[in-house]
Picture 1: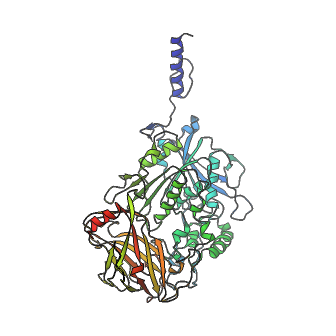
Picture 2 (picture 1 turned 60 degrees about the vertical axis):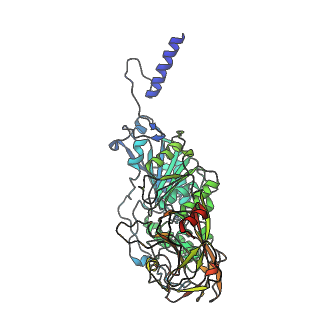
Picture 3 (picture 1 turned 30 degrees about the vertical axis):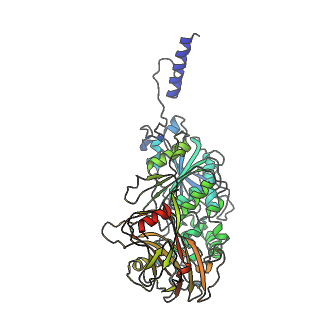
Length: 617
């Protein structure tokens, strides 16, 4: 064959390969649908954007555990939605996988389902009334979330109900091992390593012949926890995860530094309440599950008496299980999420960085939930699921939505916390019960000031009050320039209590308090934190306080990245019971704070120089 003929042959062969099929002489080319990429992102392909042709089917994946005690390995209910080309043209695609305990609905009920919070710290109280729940309908709801977003871009979308919910067998454990092993099993099935069945108890198998074996997971809140849970197993095929506002530790969700604390908006909730809330599985298995998990494992381990960290909580802290993790991590969270607080994502992000995993983080200034912009998610999944070298690993490590920007217009930074931030220490000057000062210079012999606990006053009311005996407030001078806080503030409080146990709550606020029309979530509360002074030495062992004796309590507030505007004052507010979050003991406990032994550490962009310029000390 001469060179000219060889060239024509190469061109013809290449053309036929691009068309996806070798044709007989005289036939017209048939173009197969394939994913298309532009500027490092998967594009919408009209051949995939045909919902009426999408193939939907359910199946049951066998796991390695039996948590409902029936002597059979639990099977997870899985729903698949895929382009029809995966059936008609032999197309294989990567998978976006979402798992949840909520797809089948949840238990409904009133305040009797929550723990009573009106009692003294350390007092044994009767638990909540556990509901008898009946799932409605023969088939639970399987979410359609993410389907319209990802299938047209060349992905298959898979959903599964977590153990003990919907048609998935087993028992919910709220962070137990089976909630990690269940999504692992589904990924193993997607990669051809375990069996899937057409029926919950049948023998007819089904294979994921349309899967490339590349899986990415995402989801919000509990649905964002499960991708991390799966990743901690080190399962092969899980290439990337995008957890959104994930609960990464049930101790950090229901406790703070030894203190029994509720998540924002759910006063009196605890891990057994959440168990009841999601337990929508087979009613015939509920008695066994309740006895084994809720009424034994949880009852014996959750410890609402001391609030201490123990083996039960350690087992439900995903930070402790990250060693096998290999998946690339794009984390998303809101700095004003007082339900699943921002420490949850930050602690995992930093650990993943230390492990050398590909990492990126997106923070916004709003509350619970809020995914990264579609462009960020698209680039992440395009890189790690389709294998397109789009350079996402060279993008900015941190993207933060500034206070007055749109959520889809984040500002890029080298990392979070801002590398240009450094800690400054602020000391207290006397001023109760109005307001004392916060200064970089330490003035000795400031003495002691006392507050009286009363949970009937909200934190907001205390921060707004010109004077109150129920809180201690210390403020900076009025800012003449903006101050950028980036990182995790920390407080050290030297205090004495009039009782053996007391709540300790700390708010960092921006004053004057703004309640005008159009007030933003960032205008007033900068960040918050809570602690049990009984745990001043150890998180795993609390010691009753000797009334009148002073103890030093140091703890982190929630991480933040916020610009405090010129004209405001930064205020440190110390009080006892937080109406929205803590137990509600009888009013009257006195906390006396030693000002000389109390300080606030703030991470400021530009450090001490930037702060001094802004306050002109």
